[in-house]
Image (cartoon, rainbow, N blue to C red; front, side):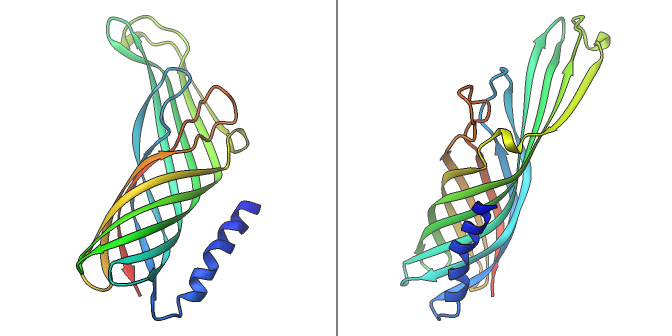
Length: 215
């Protein structure tokens, strides 16, 4: 809860200052493509589609440079599969991890003309809830047609991970007008959310494609 208050304290001054002529604010949302790196059980991560939505405030320093703060709700999802090789390939282990996070991106924008802007910044994220669902095949006979029973276990893992994280990103915006724009962001690296030395949950990778509207 303290982390949520900290995020709000950092973002609220931007909303107050938005009354200044150099400030603009708006809303944005779109698709996110995420995973959590690798898994200690040997599972290979698969990128999963989720979404993000929220608001932003931008301070236009001059024609070329601007600073932007955002407050987003972001769903992060990752899936791991560990293969068992019999006469046909089967999956012995499947885990689906879902994180509900509040993210505050802080970025610097460089405008190239009126329609394009290059973005570089850092995300400060807070994980409000995390769940993991595991499906395990308990017996193996080598073919898809003769699996043993499958057991499913779902648990809340919010207390098993670090609730805060940082990620760096670069991005590109295309402005159709003074109000409507589209954007794409590529996240480069981030901090681990593992509490232990096994690094079961490695840095969050989360790419964005979205649309925004300035008021």
